[in-house]
Length: 188
Image 1 (cartoon, helix red, strand yellow):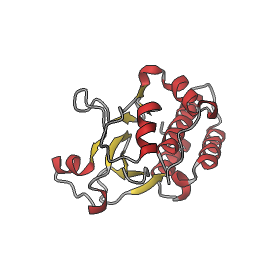
Image 2: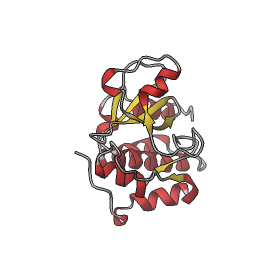
Image 3: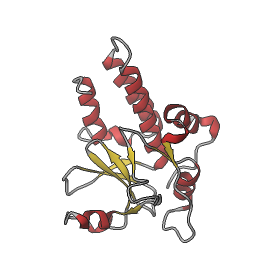
Image 4: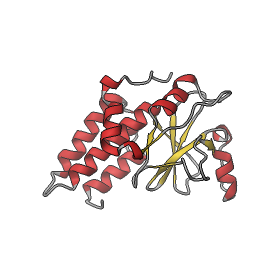
């Protein structure tokens, strides 16, 4: 069951605006007849998704169209296999080496790695995705400081993410764990 939209006091919306600015947050208008569950639609319409070099929101890919589009249509363009259960999922955006999708009825967020046939459950809901993205942005910003303690930054990220939603880091082979390994190897 999706979590309710975070209150301003929870800091998620404040972090989003502070880290990405008003131009770095993409809102998806709530549409009548949307297949999205109510909490997910409201989150997309009032909180939105970040858009920067690390996470590219799907918005704007097809002109001014801002509502998520279905996965099967995207995969059909490249004649890529699309698992039956994921055909109606919505494309939210892109991480450096993965496609981020949303199951509209549950609000769960899934990741398809580049060229992979299978997907991973990445976040319980959109709030958890946005929290993870804002925490990674904090890690990236701190990484740019002179002589950062990379292990300390990664540990702080893991702690903050696990406190909100442990799903992204549960699987040692998850996309988030893969990216953290790259940070630890100083490939960023």
